[in-house]
Length: 442
Ligand SMILES: C[S@@+](CC[C@H](N)C(=O)[O-])C[C@H]1O[C@@H](n2cnc3c(N)ncnc32)[C@H](O)[C@@H]1O
Image 1 (tube, rainbow, N blue to C red):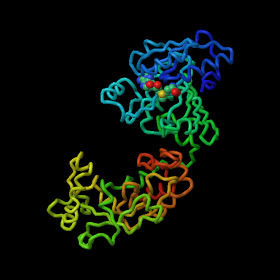
Image 2: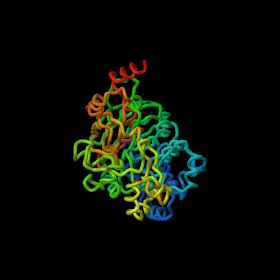
Image 3: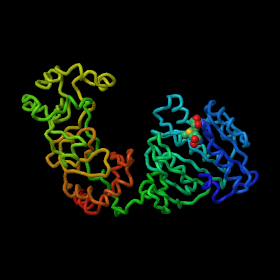
Image 4: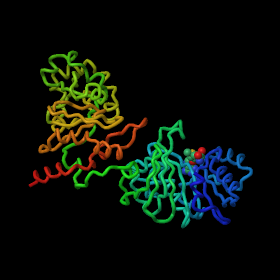
C-alpha cells in the first residue's frame, strides 16, 4: 500500500501525510518510515488521528523513532478539516462499522454532515468522504476497505462523489488478509485529479483497465469483467409482475410437514399448499416436493379471521404456545396464528420461476403449475402473462445471464452470489422479449 502511495510521486520536503485511525501498533506509520529510509526520501510531516485512548498510549510507546503528531480525536468530527488542513498523502485501514452498530445520535449527526451517509452506510464510507475532503490538489489516498462500496446501493453517494476524483486502482486482495473478518477486502488508490481510467486487479489476479460508471450506479460489471448483453433498454422488471423473496412463517418446523403427516381435514378445507425451500430446489432439481405448508390466508391474500379458521384453528390451538413465542407475534403484534409476513397470494400462486436466494452459481427452475408457495430461502419471479415461461427460463439459465448476475450480485461469504430483487430486476433482457413486449403493448 505504501509503494502504491508513493508510486508516481516520491515524498519531498514540505509534503504532509495523514494516518486516520492508526490502531495500536501503527503499521502504516512504520511502513512509511521504512519506505522513506530505504528510498532516501524525507519522511513527510505526519499527523495521525485515533479515537481510542488505549490505542493512542500503545502507539506512543511504539513510535519513539518517528516524528508524528498523534491526535486523540474523532476523524469524523466536523472541525477536523479546519484543524488539520490538507494532505499530500493519506493512507489507512478505516474502521468497518455498519450503520446498525451506530446509535441514533451518531446516525443523525453523520446523516447531517456527510453526503455519503446514505441508507445502510458503513463508517469506512464516511472515512473515504472525510479523507477526500482533506486531500490536497494532486494528493493521493490509499485505503484498504471492504470491496462492497463498489456495488451496494448504499454506496451510490460515494461512487458519485468519486466521479470528481481519479480512482486510479482497485486491487482485490485475498480474504486471508483479515482472517477474523467476513469481508472481501480491496485496496483503493485515489488521486485528486480527474481521469476515468481505473486499473483493476481481480482476486484471481486478472488485470484490466476500465471506465467506471459516472452516475453512481454499480461498478460490478466493469470491475468483474461484465458481459455485453445487447442493450435493448428492457430489463427483467419490465416483463415481470413480481420479483421477491419467498415467505417466512417464523417457525417452518411447525408450519411445514410431509403431506403424509398433515391431517386430511387441513388438506380438504384448503389450508395446505405445496411448498419448496432453497435447499430442496437443489436436492429435488425442481420446485415440486412432498412438503405442504399450512397457510391462514385465503386465495385473495386476506388473513382469515380467527372464528373462521376451521381445521387450521384446531391445529393452531394445539401449538398456540409455540406460535405465540415467535418474534412476529411478540414484537410486531401479528395475530398469534399468522405468518411472519403476509403472502401476496394472487401474484405468488401463478406460473413462475424460482431460484435459491444464495447459491454458488445462479440456477433457475420453472414452476408452471403456479401452485407452490416459495419459502424464504427461495426467490420467485412472476412473468407478465404474455411472456413464455420456458423462454424466459432458458434465458435466465443462459451463460450470458449467469455472467451478468455473477458480475452484478452481492457476494455472500464463501464465494456465493446473493439474489436480490434490486439487482435482478435490472438484468437486461434480449431483443426477442423486448419485441414481445412491444407487440403486447400495441
Ligand atoms: C480497522 S482499525 C485499523 C487499525 C490500523 N490502521 C491497522 O491497520 O491495524 C481502525 C482504527 O480506527 C480507529 N477509529 C475508529 N473510529 C474512529 C474515528 N471516528 N476516528 C478516529 N479513529 C477511529 C479504531 O480505534 C481503530 O484503531
